[in-house]
Length: 229
Image 1 (cartoon, rainbow, N blue to C red):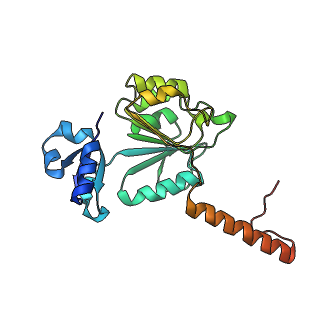
Image 2: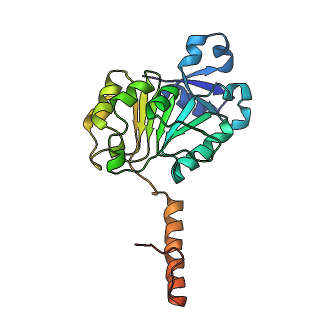
Image 3: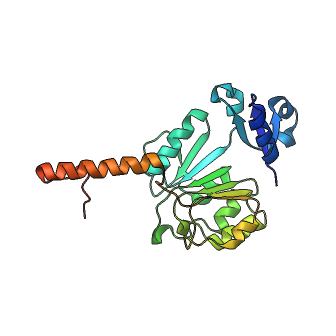
């Protein structure tokens, strides 16, 4: 199923043709007086963020972040410039500008996109279950970059298959590296291998840090980034 995008500006012909084969693109003028079309827009595509009007940004969705630790904060920081409404759920509220929601179901109900960044483990196992997905609703999207165990995968597949939620984007799965083959039959889910830090830049930085630790240890017997047991 092709998704609807709001197209702002123009791309070179080859790029534009490529975009047009995979998505339905609509100009800003087309959505101004068409409420149904406006609510069907799933993303904005533009060659430059500076071309996006503030009035368009104001229509961006409400985002909920489950687990506002280091990674959750980095995601929130990157989303702030777009002016989206950010709320978060966690064990306790933090002294931040984002709204703290102590009820996970209420966070899901108020969110268009629910981003899961919480740690794994027994405390969070299957935290995102059928009831949370139902609260997220038929127009909501789930994005999980935390741990596969945090989401009840069986119930997620059922929710995707029956339109309980609009879609999902998953970077982690239960039973990795094996992925439930039923995901491959769904057209409302984006699957990504759990790449984590697997970028050339990050791995090079990790190697540099390892070497710097070795040099420092051989110099005075201490590490720059010690691992505390």
